[in-house]
Image 1 (spheres, rainbow, N blue to C red):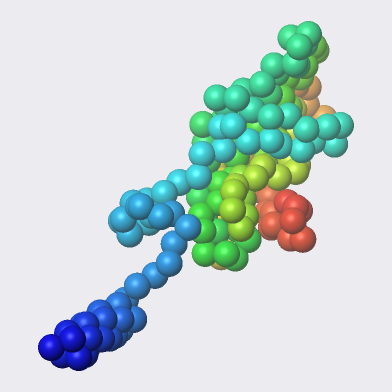
Image 2: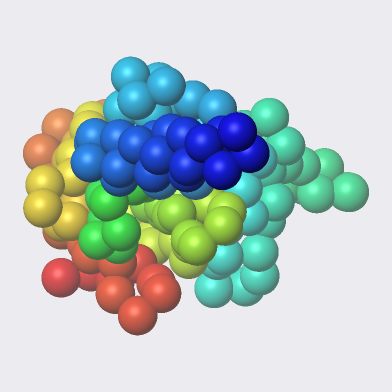
Length: 178
């Protein structure tokens, strides 16, 4: 009788193992989420650290203000989602607004990129002063940003009306213009 139960248990376990490995199973770092939830996942860049030429800023709820209150960095609501580092996970391209003690409103582009475990903010690239971001898109890992600018000889008091496009890629761990 013991022999019969042991053989039956082995057959059942073998059947379960075969069933498990022959159906479409995928391993995901998003444990506990259904496939539909994973497909709709959009990384949230609102608490990331972004690197500027003169240092880094860590956002809290889409903004950071220096201790003296003289400088503020804000995350624009316009984001683009897509895979920029070829790991099969969506990343986020963001516009960041940096305002200091003067009249400038400096717009940068940055990204929130998936890593082996977590997402991280990238370096930022300056787009312009008092420009008007229009859109960002990601196609085949290539980032295209569009914004309204003004002619070089126009003062900053003139409303930006010239549509400008720039193209970026994520290469060797940083955002670079192409």
